[in-house]
Image (tube, rainbow, N blue to C red):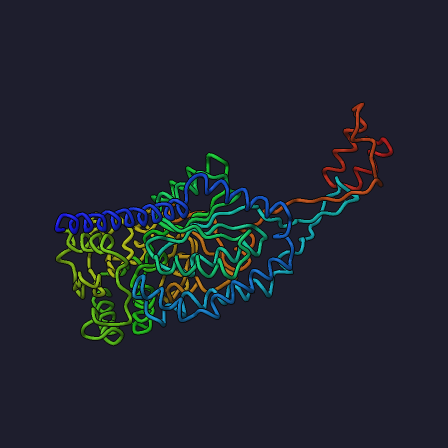
Length: 513
């Protein structure tokens, strides 16, 4: 009896083990089904190209419908978006709404309002050589485009380019950043629900999925992120001669003069630095250049305003985002602990490794060969470089790779003119920080190491449109002089036409020298 009982127990265990194996096999099959590999990418690309070939994405009606649906995501799901952004990076609700949701709503509404005008062919003049004729520039979509987004503003930097791509009439694949998984999942869910799934798709994942995407032939790629990956994207695109927009970053400087409203300047510097995702923004001020005499006053003002904004214990403030993950946290700590700057910290820098927070840190008189001055900080550390004369600032900035943004605080007209004339950067802003990003009539993009191409407002539409040259002629005015056999008289006539001289044309017709 005991033996039979034991055998029965053993049979039950075996059955449970078989059941567990079946469950594991089912999970593996589901993983394989959901896995995005080369075959999945080819099937997806085939569907997108077939959709594009129907011509439906070129119609005004389709574009407007999709833009309205995209707007609904921002309008109807604000609480979920706020929660996702908080989950990914503890982003304050104020920043999440103003810097992400509101900007997407504004961008979408502008595209809806202006789309007919953007789509309208642009009439242009012709020349005497082609008389009689007319010409126009027709904006046509590229076709199938890829948008690879970043983690620091995962809602804004994902959907803002998508708005431009759809407005231009393309089919789109969005690859959100895996570093912000909650927002990535949200985008996949709601884009799948609201958008035309035959034309707009989201691919989630990490490096393997991105690598598979980059193996495909795209008609345009927009990538937002760092220069290391930007080079990989550019190299992959080059194999297919695919045009690329790279939105990168760099060390965005601030030049601070002494003839300013110091309180307002300090507040605006803090807003652009720590009030933009705690320094984790591509256009966030990276370092300040000011004179040795003025630096102490500037530091004191920054300290005072930081205290007012974030209190005595900034690590406990709900108004500061956390560092996105432990890798970035350790990278920032390495910058702070560098022997060349560890004694230069004049404010903040406390750490909370559990919650991945670093208090706003100011470092004064950092040497130019330190780690912090030789890579993009992308965090809550602000370095200050001092000079004897403010004009030396231009040499410091121009000796480095061109930044995505550069800022100047001054009331000096000549200094403003020199700044605009001599500093090459993606964008310039005088007497404030980061706000130029919110102006849709200004292009947003880098130059040199900080990127190539730009978007925002109509610039987004233009970025995802091929400007096709079209000329119309009738059968009138067919001059025999353009055809063989070539003669001296014909050449004299054509030269007169090309020079635009009616007197010479008249002489050539009459055969006069």
